[in-house]
Length: 426
Image (tube, rainbow, N blue to C red; front, side, top):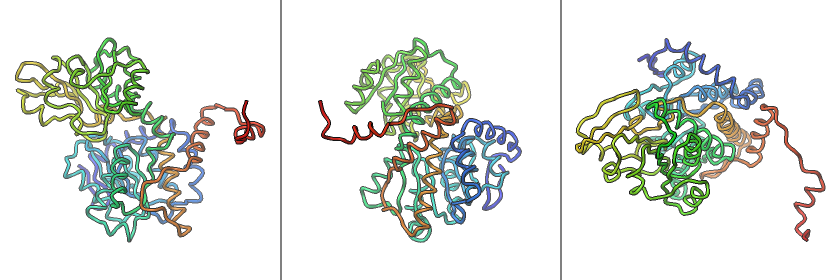
């Protein structure tokens, strides 16, 4: 472990050269964020602002961090999941002078130590994925909200749910922008990014054939839908479990089978949880599973699969491949748990492809600019969860289209008049 007090703690600084190559590749796939970097690197609108970030340390995240720095911000960073940090990328950021505290395989105590380290420079802005950074401020340093923090942003569904609950309780001490809820985020990153990267993680950990398998996807929100579509595309028979009637109906009309987990447990070959809710797969489900069933999670926290209950009737356990543990049960059947029940797409693979993170992180960058700009004007959003402006969504989507060499039509003045003329009819 390489550690410089108050500056960084990473696995190995000598991995920096490898990390720089990964970041270079990501930059070549993220034209929107790179265009924003070029636009703001001279004016430096974030100069004088300190940003604490808690987000998966991937090559794409490094592109975001470098863009924030180019825009003038002072940044301190930690990973938002114990198994999602790419040690080479963390080393590259540390070598470039970024304050970063993250390494792959940390325990829970180390995880929160890293968050606390990022808070020592008293941030003005926070950038979160899962709300652990925001919650740590509220729990351990509530005075920061009054003295230093002017606002924050949140990247993922689980974090937004936590923050909306805090806001509803009157417990949120500063405004947070729900980047996750942007159309250019959850309709792309969550669907196409989660779908592809989740299957990528499963394939790296197992090398199984998806064609012909019964793949059980728990949850048919944006992430679950993306996973189900990709699994179906590889020839799997997809089964969806849900608690929301409309989501279950959508899955049915999309060609998926819908049933309760109690029934799906008996026939599934591969189980993927994508709900953000605890105890989706529990003891009674494990007891019904086939010999050789593969179980994994692509929701933010590792609580969706109850591994504590699985351990109670596991006779022996061994790692058969990287990120793949074989649990031999007392009845002789084997269940394979991937990535210790944590995010399989990040722990066993590289996370979402750079192309979809381009738009997500452009939203993060633009939202940080917006919060800083309001502060400069002596304004501040209310202490609740805010959506991004609709114009920002369209601006980012339009820029993405231009970088792909695509053009779209534009409404004529007559069409605009027709749309807004409520008297027009048959």
